[in-house]
Image 1 (cartoon, rainbow, N blue to C red):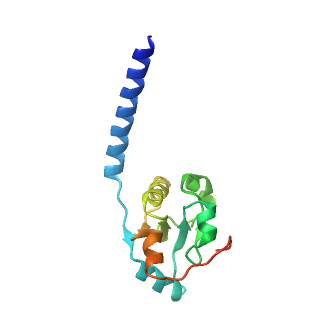
Image 2: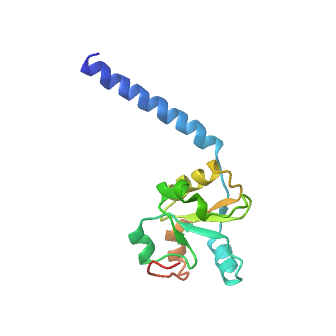
Length: 138
């Protein structure tokens, strides 16, 4: 196979992979929670499991009180840290949405049925002036 043929085959495989991903992503959807509602749940000691899926540096610079840190590509490997009940509420967030979406999809593949993303993401939480905790502790 010539170099040109290998490149063409690689491009074709990439296009097919992205098309398949688009079909899967279209079939998957999950709800979101308003920052105000999450803040109220935290204040009432009724917060769901909150997962910050940003980098360690971002998490330590400021995260939602009570949020545990699990990088977005490692969610599946931390499944033992999640509730045994697949219907317990879980909220995931990142700075602007894409990483939270990937994490929510991984939770969905683990059969969690009550996963939500934070509306307006961490950037919206910060814009509203909601409280942040710094450091490595939840």
